[in-house]
Image (cartoon, rainbow, N blue to C red; front, top):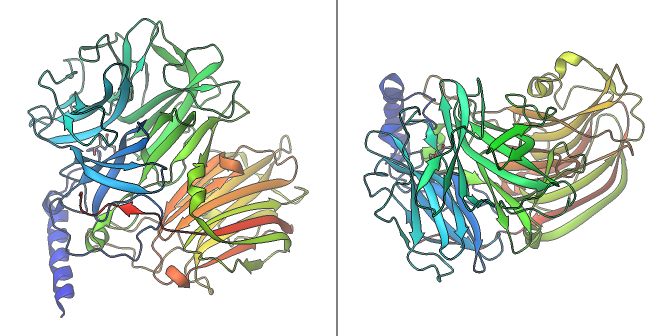
Length: 590
Ligand code: DQQ
């Protein structure tokens, strides 16, 4: 037995032992493996590390925190374990970038040090306060596990890097009162200044199984008072982590809005991250600044069936307003889908998705998302395919780029939807199951067609991303299902040594709100070794999958266009690029 086998056997023993005794429940926001939190990382396995996604050189990361554009730099803070590859010992790590592509790591911004955060420095945000500069508000955990909101200020606001942060002694700014659940009170949003001269921030919470977003007000950014009523709440949704609350324009579909924008021509978006399932949902609605109440629109489902920023592996997301380019940008955490012992062996876990612009769709019923334009600066070798008919059962290889690290944009022309399968109304709320039932190999009428990513030529391993068009029997409107199916993605052993733990290979799916009136639908995919980010119909439906092929890796990964529908499909245009690896000057600081 070699040294690494012995180490692995020991690890198995530790894990099995843990599974019998020590693991805390999932209600506690992250799986907690106390004995592994400070297990030092011996070496980093690079096989599934990403090339152009944000990730530190090693260890665990989760939520993006405090994104902001300040004095020429984009700042990204994030939840980070400096001691290991599982959740724990959480601090705010800090990186800066001039272009959202090349990043430089700085020293961590905040870490547990005071009575009000000694048990953890959890998620929060940054607000640019006129006359004061950037201010962090974040959740600290005290030694009794009570969650408390505090603030931190830069030592030198004139430093564009914002290198050093101070937690003033008049902290904290908000403690849970007797009506509240002190172990469910966290993740304050970026604050905004209302016309009445009071700042507002929203904090996530829960009472029994009701998800709650409290609103706090302050005149001076120091003394905060909870408003009488939550800005919104919803029964049976559990803890609302990482709320995000922002306006979108009803008339300008090209620019984002800052939080304090007031006007009748806006709607508000409230996004919450559901601790129970680790999915998020958002509603569109009306915010009344006088009563501080938010009411979702009647046609914006408020609950488990709600709309999502991303229907895949995506959580704890946060937007910020980039005043340099007048856009709202979304960051989100894509956790690993492999097992905890995989994470320990590879020495790292968690990535941030490519930042995305957020706009209201012209239908005004949902948002649309698109990778920030800066990412296109990484596009290298390029190939194009035009007007290529793909008949039923055909699979066509896309050659001439590096399929394991690529950006692919394709427009399919389907033409008539005559052959689309009838849509059974009972399918409506279970796209995930529908994708599982009607996978990429199940012949349909119109579709399944799409791209096969990270594939071996014999399809021993592959991650297909595809559409399948149904026809509503009552009104003949198309219902377009989009799937990113990780089930065939890896030959790797599914099971970890923990009884319930296994690699997660979901058939993520969602409907795309399009009538395909012109017979077309587009798909863009960012492929990066262990992440596949897919944007259907110009960002109406987005799905991120994490996958771990063992054969379809690096230069052995292939990319195909395919069609398994009886109706032929034309690849009207396909543009694909190699993606270069940006500079990530991350070593050293962490
Ligand atoms: N992660 C943080 C919490 C937040 C959760 C702790 C969401 O503040 O609620 O690392 O992933």
